[in-house]
Length: 204
Image 1 (cartoon, helix red, strand yellow):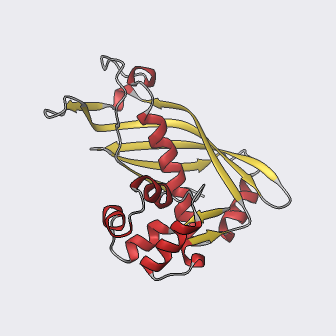
Image 2 (image 1 turned 30 degrees about the vertical axis):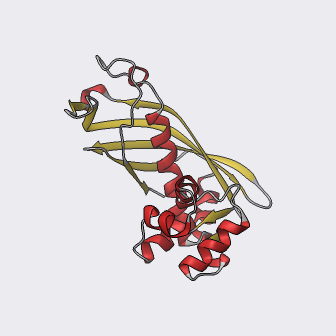
């Protein structure tokens, strides 16, 4: 698995994407994609520009580990009894004050010699548009011990990227699901960005 380390390098240099865009001319969409860890389709010219701008090598801009991890998430449900919202006066969209969500996540993992899928439960809680995600593998899952072994071998940067990947997946799923499909009452069929800043905690 090859992941971009741009987000870490921006933080180390106290830089924002808007600043890098202004200074380098690299598109915001490309920078945002790289900041979430995905180097798919990036051009060598872009890599060269970023390395010169940040004064780093390509080896510092990207992370490699001999393990591929993809994430799929299903059965997201907002628990109505733990949900409250208010209305944003400016854009007339709901603001989530608090909520609790449950879901199921599959970590699909491939190493040189083995492929397997680790099923985990997601427990999510929110406060004013912050989404906190707890990931807990099912105790009965036979792949649990093997995953923990491999996970412990990952560079710290990849642990961060894995958390970012999960948080982004959950956010995308929620942002693109009509609220009535999440089981909320009297909220209409609108699709809108509910959560701005997801964070992930692993219970491994």
